[in-house]
Amino acid sequence: MGATNNKLWQKLCEILERPDLLQKAEYQTIAGRLGQREQLIQELENSFALKSADEWIDLLLEHGIPAGPILDYPQAFESEHGRHRQMRIEIDHPLEGKVPNIGFAVKMQGTPQEVRRHPPLLGEHTQEVLMQAGFTPDEIKELEKQGAFAV
Image (cartoon, rainbow, N blue to C red; front, side, top):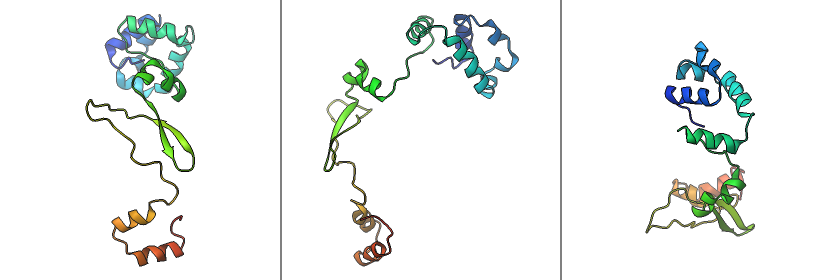
């Protein structure tokens, strides 16, 4: 729920039937509400407990207050929106097989994104990274002998 300005805050209090929240001095301004955030969250949770999330979402949206459910990963992946946007992808991994992952958030027509590498194994790219950083093969071997990184 996003009652992020005074107009939406007033609407929210009306919908919640909580005129007492509008009258509290500490909740008169955005800064005041933020300063008393923990106390305000408890007040709002007490009111929101009176109806289901779906009922509140419908009611809030009907009155112009941005609202939506907070989903966990499985719920988000299985939602109509998540499936349509292909937000769950699988990546081939040399040890684990197919590994589920979050899809690309930005989708651009004509420039499809692709995963080019699997999630790295421990130490898989250490030598490559160190070489790019300017270390010589001898320096890398010495670091390895000293146990500076996993191999």
